[in-house]
Image (cartoon, rainbow, N blue to C red; front, side, top):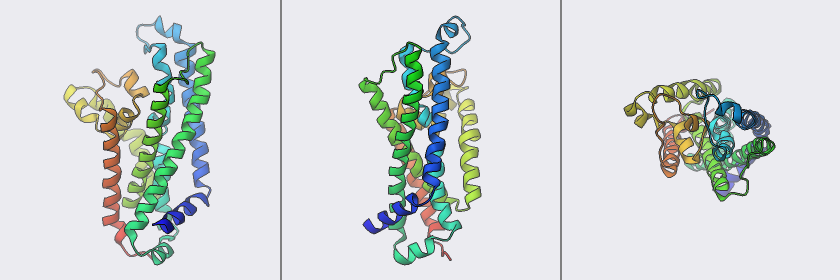
Length: 272
């Protein structure tokens, strides 16, 4: 197992993918966090005077800003996990890997472990962006960024866990859909279009909202404890949410199911 872990770590760190995606995550999260901090921080008085504008108390702003790492940036560790598998099929690097380590379950387990660590690192990168840029704008706007609060660092820890789980889910998606283009299209389509629409539709009625809270993005928001979607609401009813540990279990279960499905299908096929 140690050899498999070492091999997967080298595969990940010897290509440009990891740092390109980490820079993308930093820029994406930093821009989003800065924009939200500017709108709800600097323009707080103007928004408060408009009854139709989203209303957030100042102490609710820092968690919302810092949670952008997973609320909008979760797609990056998800893509990282998927590409870590699909690139193996595309460039046929699985052939020498399986020759060196014939026990394919150990190879997949090592990849899941390494990508979980990488996802956690991506969560830290995102937090540096959201806390550094978003927190600075909040401070300039006269709002306490709450960087000394235990609750803030508890949220940060959950962000790291959620990012790690998203990378694991990505490994499962890549194992199940081994075509690289198809895998990325499915990931982007679901993350950017399908799930937001499902969450919006599910929030219309109470009974659909009770089902919608089990969607991956909703479970991730529940695990972290804050999100732009749950803070502002997405429909005509109040947003329903799982407990933080339930959200974590939903994400973990999804990752395990996808990875197992991939192992039982494409991962067990002959590779050339």
